Image (cartoon, rainbow, N blue to C red):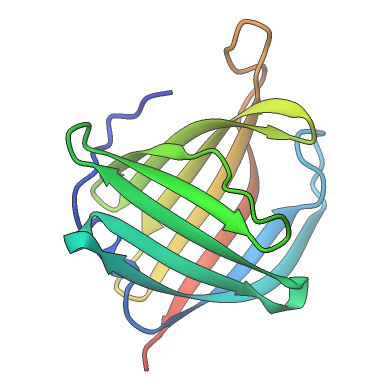
Length: 165
């Protein structure tokens, strides 16, 4: 999937400074038409490297018993970010989503598997001010022809609030 959004150095600089407290809502079962959400909190801190071309954040999900790391790299020539995820449960780097920003809205797309089923993945980022942001993850099943087999389903939403130190 492609997006008209563009990746530029420093797009993720807004995450640096202080600790972010995050209210999570996550579907208990994905792609079954359910509406049973679990809620939990976590925190993270971020840093930017290589003059804004790399962004890293470490997430602590204390109530869920794991940590995670997001790292983002900018393909300067393609003007596109790749976002990768690793968690302490399995230590595996997940397939990236790729995209960029249009103003304060970022769109990133990729392909993955969920419970053994191939899915298209979409991350939506929203910068809502200097100390608030929202991230969501959507899946759509992949049909035999490679196209989406059904609509996007939002399965995880993070409402973020920065605590400055």
